[in-house]
Amino acid sequence: MTASMAGFAIEDMFIKAAARALPLGQILLTMGIVGVLTFGLMARGRGEAVFPRVFLSPTMLVRSAFEVVGRLFYGLSIALTALSTTSAILQATPLLVVAAAAMIFGERVGWQRWLAVIIGFVGVLVILRPGVEGFSALSLLAVVGLIGFAGRDLATRAAPEGLSNRQLGTLGFAMLGVAGAILLGWSGGAHLPDLRGFGLLAGACTFGILGYHALTGAMRTGEVSVVTPFRYTRLVFAMILAMAVFGERPEMATWIGAALVVASGIYTLSRANR
Image (tube, rainbow, N blue to C red; front, top):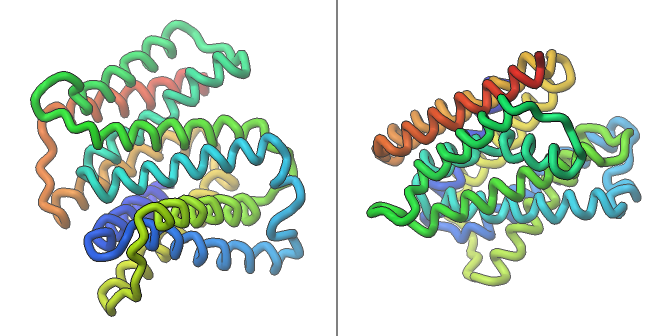
């Protein structure tokens, strides 16, 4: 899980760097195509349908719609705002899933976990700082991306059984390509990248695929209750890369908000496991 989070953080770094010279839609579309080809070939190698008919079921269509929203707005947030801020806000995804699962699926959530969820959302507000100097409306892009990913995770709980990780990976990268195509169709400007651009695209694709591989390996072979809290290591890697590569210096509000989100998330997960 830790290796997976490192891979995703490095993927984000490559996306942000590539977006300085290439349209974001072109980057996401390219990554989507490469990911679909990779996971599609893996599925075919196992004798599985690349795009099974169940992908057209209402639940999977809802999941795909949320995936597009999450990928699109999270990508925009990476390109247009500080990587450290975007990564910190993303850590609230499990908290939103817990709250929504209680309201939608009727899952039992005690007052301690509700309190942790509220504290986590307060942490997001501390990071955003609405109504005070330094607030950027662009930071709301990450919030919309967070909602998209939470909706995707909730829909996955109701997804039909029998789908392999390779098939879900194919669908996920296909939706990344859809998000890229939507953005590229709106902004335009695609062009052939230079050698550096090719390198950045290759890095984003490689680490995105490796991160997904490591994630599925962790979830399939490890105790879910043990490995899931290690998702928060992504924030550590993201902060290091943001400061070392992009020269970001997160403000104290970002550190405090991130600490609230991570602490409440880990408590919520550990409480649920007990």
